[in-house]
Length: 411
Image (cartoon, rainbow, N blue to C red):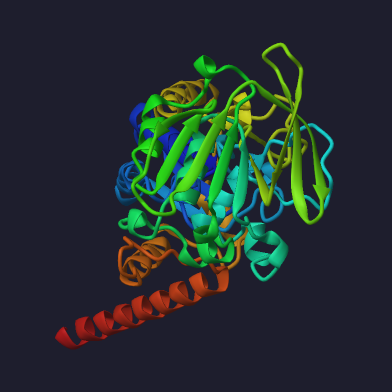
């Protein structure tokens, strides 16, 4: 039995692990458009939340135990078609997530400094594909001293915390210091967070707010009431306001301007003049009309996670959904039909595709490169990642040749 999983993030890896339990002997191929596995864990979870990132250890055991193969740097719809997968696998599981920030849905001046929370988080997580990396030399792509965040969920608080933390408070993280300097985060003086609904309906977890308020370098205000004070000379001020509905984003005198209405009943307009605006209002599929979603139901395809529900769940929800997806896969597997699995796909891919063994070499190199106060220095350049992989492959080939020579001499 052969199953392909498209997407190497939490949903995909949890599904692969669940499949190994319900289908003993199944051969699983995990494809990801990025060269590294673990998706949201590597590129989406805040770089100062290393405890949450450690869930990747579970997935490492999945790939190391055999029967599950990783193909990194493969985009379904470009490098491989969905039809090529269904021709070679009994079932295809789509776990491609939600890769883009949700648009605000209001008029936005094209010159306004507008960032998505997802793209900021990916940039600070060293995602080589993040478009902000290509704009690192553009002075207009700096956050500035005054930042406004639209949204009052966990992602909004993640962004606010990372923007507010000092170098010392980031010790132990794997934040991309080059990206942090490019956005000029250390220059930030004030952060304002706007929520649409009332305070009691804030969508953040209480522990997230507690963590933000515990930063010694910040002073937090909620609806005009000071919640925490700082004894530092120049703390970062974080002001949280509720019942603010965005109406439009303007660009005036080189600054970004958000006009919002009071949704509590008065309808009064509030104007916020800032250097940049970060949207944290959710995520959508990168290509809702593409090969990940356009099958007509006649193909043995199962969707899971964000690309199925339109919502990015937490890890516990991902794990539960994975069990249900694995059960659905069992009902679709036609064991009487032969499929080639990975052997049928390999000839269709080039040498640039990374295996899990290649990833282990990248992982070790990132840990080796870790600077002071960092647990690793992620490689954010695809060419540089391939240099590391090529060196690893040459070394492995050389060792294999030496072992063969010694074996022949011993005969």
